[in-house]
Image 1 (tube, rainbow, N blue to C red):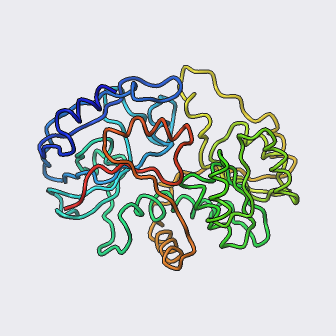
Image 2 (image 1 turned 60 degrees about the horizontal axis):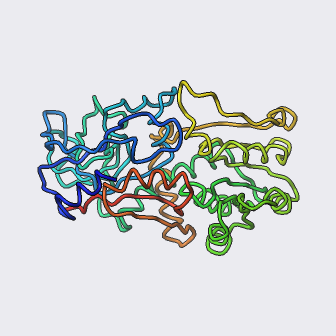
Image 3 (image 1 turned 45 degrees about the vertical axis):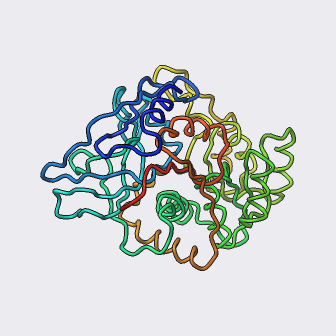
Length: 361
């Protein structure tokens, strides 16, 4: 990747404070996303105007949503414009402020985007920046993972949609991912029996040996559907869908009467998301929703913004009590973001994927 060589050759590990490194969307992908879809540029660091604050990125979250935002299909948030900075959720620090509600030195969550510096401006940002609570006693990476949007997605999807009951069977796709791994553990805490679907024997062992899943199925094995049958002898009461496609299709006939499906993501289809591309093939057994009187509901974590403190408090209690385990894959350097977005869709990471961009003062 020429841009990576250029960054390292020019600056090594230390970037000048006046340089704002940015990755811009070069072209909308028509398939697998890769570094070739981005342009690397260096610009001057902007100065905050009245009503703005300057945020320096500390950690950048790499998420499936990044791929959605690169497409031009209708979404819950406008697509990233070609030639514009790539959108991304991150943890940052206020380095200068012309706002009364944000002060220099504060740590904040929001859309830092794929760059070193962003302006916090409620008239421009699609999602407002939110200050972290003072005197946090957890690693900063947790605020983007188990205690951040990742953990809160699991919390609200289970409590508001799935509502698993003691003794019910919960099946989670992409269970070794950031959200799925938390979903399964919370379902266990609520008395459910949790089955994970993942993409390697190593991931399956992690789910059962460390996270307490009752069973895990490797969907890359030829007999994975028989394994799923064996793991769900009483059917499925809750299916948490992170991937869509063929795995969703296999889950539908196993659903029990009045089962619930939480539609959190469609990871298997994101690389085909484009307005001019043929739509992906949907589940061929969709009639099961009618026959079994199934509830299927999609949701976006930002729908629950007013209740974030509720979720964070519950997650923090479980974490401090040792009831939630989690894994973070932390990669060094903003220049690694494009390649690791591609790797995420290849299933090479476990748990939450983060890019370490800098350290707080």
